[in-house]
Image 1 (cartoon, rainbow, N blue to C red):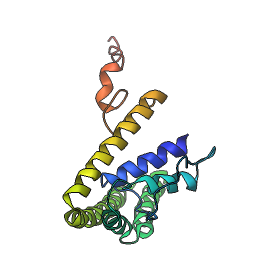
Image 2: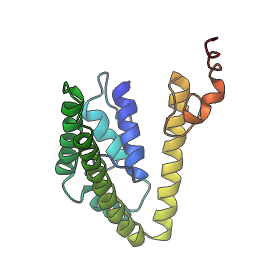
Image 3: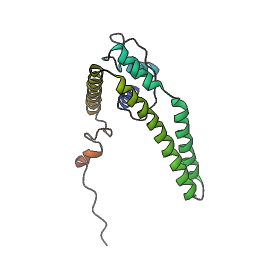
Image 4: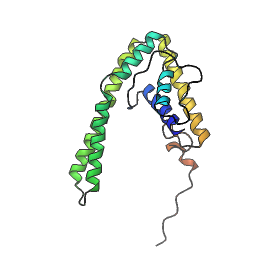
Length: 184
């Protein structure tokens, strides 16, 4: 189930242009009843990619697939991972080198920002190529996917950090008040 949630989350994030791994999607829509199976895995991600953009015209689907597969996402993610690994090395040292830690954190932010900017540039160009009908279908698909994710997360009782729903960052009213400060 975690893999299905991750797959759906990845699909939603890609659809909403968040910095996630760009993947290509086959042109054919999924066969009825196709799912990830009992253990999820690659089949779950493939099924999510197949369903993404399925309401767009064939031309619109191609435009969006081309935008999602641009660049080298593995290299982008490798740069972010390397910077994060460096942060961990610096944190694990006996003596904390704050200047080096700041540089590593800046490198991580810059790599993630560059990846995000490339993706948004590709998506902006793609959105301009879509017909009005395809843009409306894309919006409807994104809203439906968000509603499915919200419903699934609510059903499972998982926090919804992405949308600020129950248990998420905006759901702090559900939390008990903090303990009083210690008496002096």
